[in-house]
Image 1 (cartoon, one colour):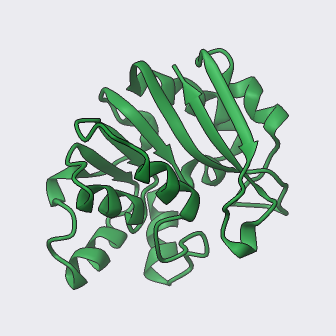
Image 2 (image 1 turned 45 degrees about the horizontal axis):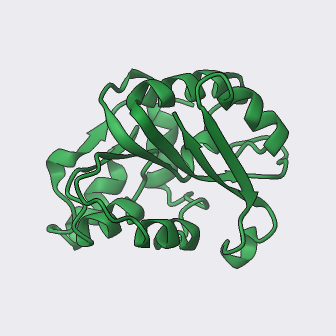
Amino acid sequence: MNKSFWDERYDTGKTGWDIGQVSPPLKAYIDQLERQDLRILIPGSGFGHEGRYLWKKGFHHTYLLDFSESPKASVLATNPNCFPSENWFFEDFFQHSGAYDLIIEQTLFCAIDPSKRADYAKHAASLLKPKGKLVGLLFNRSFEGGPPFGGSKEEYETYFQPYFSSIKMDECYNSIEPRKGTELFIQLQK
């Protein structure tokens, strides 16, 4: 999927992955974070619900990354001071560089072609500082076609094991109703 594919999805309102708020599992995780100096990246950030929530809580080293600029324009048109424009990047995740303490995964992994999943794991690890974490949600089910593209815990572990020293993937207990029983909450440490 390229930039024009995602631009078209946003421009036509075909954003079924967007739940219109911070995902409850990620909100619970964010609420227990203590160090506000963490450098945080949210790739595939879309409308930036999690990033805006982090910013409001004082995590001012949070950065959003997306292919499409359409969600930013929509968000800032209605709420111009909710997130700093300069912390919003528009580029391919695989081309992004930086050093982060935390990467929050919400929807990017399930949106990329499964043939790029090993590359995602490697690149995510390369963006993390030593002991950095990749935390978020992955689908624990299959889909017809895609995106989204599903998978299983066993499959995911094969991608992340070469790059992460600690891998924890548990059934998510606080998913939104339509996703109950179909999500894994992951906590991976470099």
